[in-house]
Length: 199
Image (cartoon, rainbow, N blue to C red; front, side, top):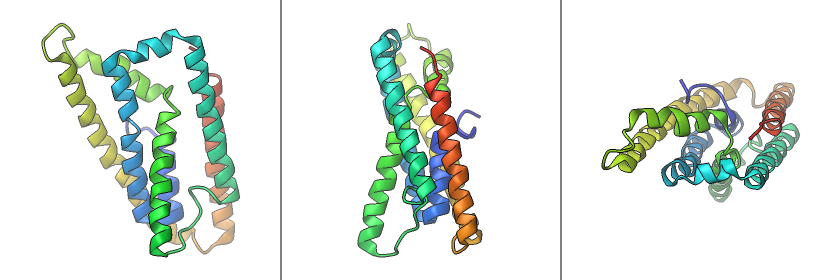
């Protein structure tokens, strides 16, 4: 349920599949899954508690996340961001894959205050681990990896479905323009929600 509920990562993956096809959708799914690693590391090391207790760290991460979401909104509005179509050349496709995966990781990295991941890793996941037992950290790490595998599967489905819908959008300038506007507005809404998130 946590993974399937659309958020910034799902939105990014769908936009990648819709704008650049199946390959980009799958790469975005992988990138968003890798973007979970910082959340897992923070939960395992206890650094999340330090960030939560520090108003300066909290605000810095929050506003970096807001800025990046607005940057993505601008790119999708201009159709130069994740919705920009692939040229089809191999060298360009390699660069495009690198941009998609780095963008996907950044979406999750700069959105460390994502309520879904925060609740899962800092509230829900520890309920399944006896923190006083030996090997508690390894068990949490294992459960975190299971969560990442589920994320990869669900986001792959999102990306593949978006790529399938691509045939009805690409080549139709009006449809592409409105698709870009919808995604752009969605990123703006997520940025506003993050901006009003309190410590």
